[in-house]
Amino acid sequence: MTPEPGGVPATEDEPSAAELLTPSVRAAAGALRPGELPCYVYDLTALRTHAASVRRALPPAVELYYAAKANPEPAILAALEPFTDGYEVSSGGELEHVRAAAPGHPLAFSGPGKTPAELSAALGAGVERIHAESLHEVRMLAALAARTASAGRPPVRVLLRVDVPVDHGVLSGSALTMGGRPSPFGMSLEEASEALRLLAGDCPGLVPAGIHAHLASGLDAPTLLRVARAVARAAADLAARHRLAAPEAVVGGGMAVDYGRPGGRFDWEGYGAGLARLARTHPGLRLRIEPGRSLTAYCGWYVTEVLDVKRSHGEDVAVVRGGTHHLRTPAAKGHDQPAAVVAVEEWGHPWPRPAAAGGHVTVAGQLCTPKDVLARAVAAPGLRAGDRVVFAMAGAYAWNISHRDFLMHPPPGFRFV
Ligand SMILES: *Cc1c(COP(=O)(O)O)cnc(C)c1O
Image 1 (cartoon, protein in one colour):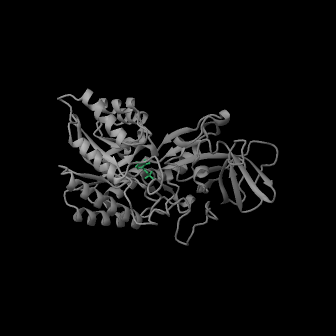
Image 2 (cartoon, protein in one colour):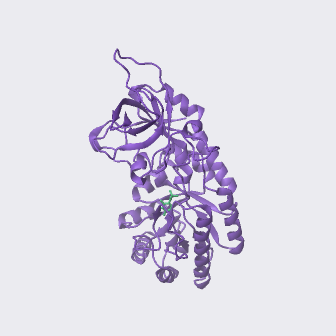
Image 3 (cartoon, helix red, strand yellow):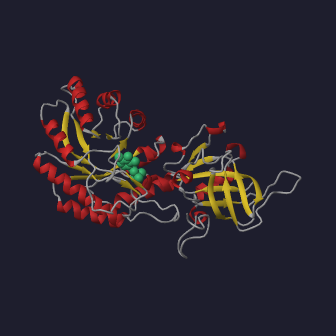
């Protein structure tokens, strides 16, 4: 937990959520009527600017696929299209949704437990790549592809998701760890070898293309580069042994997003420079990254209003419209969501306006559970009922991971500015 996420920056020169509110988000936060709240406001201009700077920091030869599960809003997919080489989808549902929202943009289909129906749909939809999670999946895919292969259709490139061994301890600092321990994700290098042998045989409609790794999320640039080096080395080795014609290596997403520093960003420049060195080390290997959170987290804001403020056991607690059933991120990750206050002067009632007595406020939602806390110790002196609270960093794994139907409150609105 960060001690003062709401307004007080970690160091003197770190901006608070309030300082980061863009003029268009601030204007929307002030203009929305109470009946239109809570509302997600996505700043697509800010998203484009950020995505452009990420793309500029990467070597031109490194491909960038956006992991759509972070936020599959069609407007967000459309905004990201010029800066990405494709989208990574993780289910049949995402596949259908993303293909319809962004027709023609290349897709890679990942995810554990793909069903025969999903694999058939992926083949039928003509996805460019499939990231296979197990030998069983490769065999299933080969059987389905043999049935549906047709002369006119370009073959699907198959990458094997591999739990590439990396030095002990490299992944231990991550927020979410998928590799290096028992998990449903991917296969061993030995199994990948066997899968490549299988795909080199009689597999109409499929081409063995390389390996895919996504070992952890929440890693900084030096750590992700260590992972990328291990993945590229393994891919180059397998490519040589199996004589892959145009080998590829996906080195993963998982770029860290620090919810305690809303103005901070992953070191894309350093990471890009490291990937450029890696590309020079492995000429002929096509490198790809697939970030989600680090692309879209910053463009989303959850705007709501304070319904009540009370003093409880010596603390100020504000109850806002909505809650973690719309913005589950702080509850899921155990952090305080950075927040800014937009003051509203009107007070329409004849009785006294509830207001915080101290400088720091716990901000809770409308759910009947003590877990429905969006942020603690928000620097909001004198916060009043009727004021607006705007939560930052709500653009990834926010609305779409939330248990929206719990308690049957109305859903939030959505604005794109
Ligand atoms: C979720 C996911 C990503 C994106 O992870 P972020 O932490 O959002 O960058 C990339 N690849 C795969 C396979 C994933 O499942």
